[in-house]
Length: 213
Image (cartoon, rainbow, N blue to C red):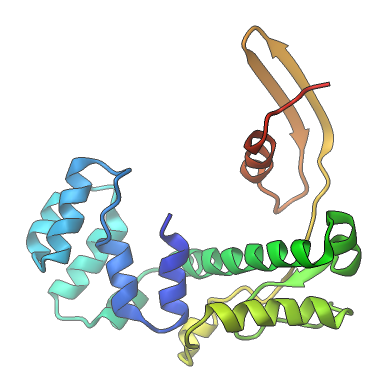
């Protein structure tokens, strides 16, 4: 639940906030030990926090070790692998992209009208591409989301290179949907285009009462 917040902090060069979201910020959904580790970090007890974090929390432990060696928050965060950093930043971009989708749907009034006007949108970022955007409305929609959501921009080249500069379709088709009822269980089968997420489809299906024909 905080991955996109870490990405936002990195995108804005707020590395102290990024460290807090990575290592601190206790969540009710985590185990007592992990919660204790995060609370220890927020109290400034780095050694105790490092001890409490289980081995699988290697990202948190890596950041703590860097801080204990005297690195500042910026260097501690940027010492993480490029793959991990991109995961954070692109999670933030996906969050902004979804805001743009929701805004566009509300303004256009229907999925059909919005997808007709904006078949694709640029991924929000400092260099959002308008190369494939013929409709000015679609490009301006993303730019407005960036303007309203980002408090500042980061000029560090290493950070700017983490952003996804591509465009994404605003809708996808569910291919060959089928279902099978077995007692109290329902088995759903479907295919999605590359880059689509089954979890999003299932969330939308189960958000309201699911009625099978």
